Image (cartoon, rainbow, N blue to C red; front, top):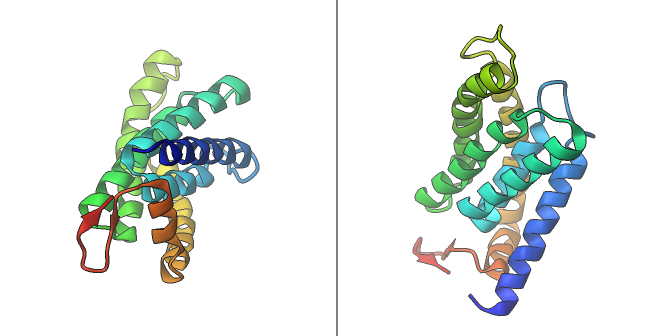
Length: 180
């Protein structure tokens, strides 16, 4: 990776983290943060699964430290962000699979992982295994829908590919082969 590409990725990741932190309290429903899922999917598509994981982790830590959000800020984001990027790449650039990855990763896996974290580490003793699943699924569907619509528009006008190429992200050419 050349210096310019590396610098662009760091700057873009920083912008994604800042955006995620700033909009999360503004566009939030009690117990749900649909904007986090929007950011996760967009980052996964623009930069790939590992940058999406880093993005979700940084946003979660900042939200926990400065906004008093419980560990759900991490458990409700990292699995979906990573799986979103993995499924997007595995599907050779299908945007719907990026959304499905976020829904499964956060709505199912993240919600189940949140149970022991909140029960044993935070002391919320009256929770059931699937306590967070309805809220997490609802939030991921809301955020995923907005992300999908946004990314479809970018794809149709050619900007998605251009952004990915500028960032040095693995992309698909018109023949369906992977390039970087």
